[in-house]
Length: 169
Figure 1 (cartoon, rainbow, N blue to C red):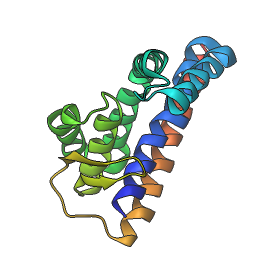
Figure 2 (tube, helix red, strand yellow):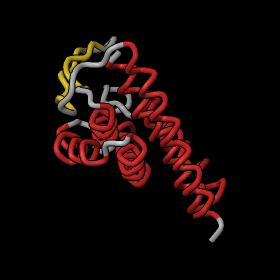
Figure 3 (cartoon, rainbow, N blue to C red):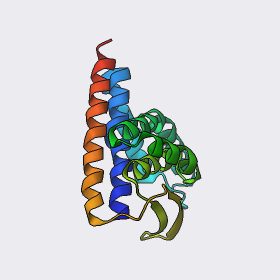
């Protein structure tokens, strides 16, 4: 359940809010360029031997390009989740301890907004990682995935409205 909520949070920022931010700022080319940078990071943004230099550059470019969308996602998660103080406190307090400068804040904001605790030990195909605890609530249960989907939808609606207003200028 935890991985599903974390994935919903991060993908809300990376796949929805950030492209809308760049579309509002630079139109369709901005959204396409953002998605290209984000996809490049997903494909080669790791530090294995083959992609050491190029992967590092892709990851840093994605960190920079994703920054505004992640911060807007944090703001909207607090407003849409009905617990702004808890969401923003978790994002500020816990998000910076996460290895990602963007995903950590977004996941922490979702944790706070939903009254959950995310993070901890995660087993990947390549390794086991111990991530910091995000939020101060309980561990997620199956019903919390549906709550996270509703939060994702509300954040998406807010981002679409803001992007439409931004694009009209």
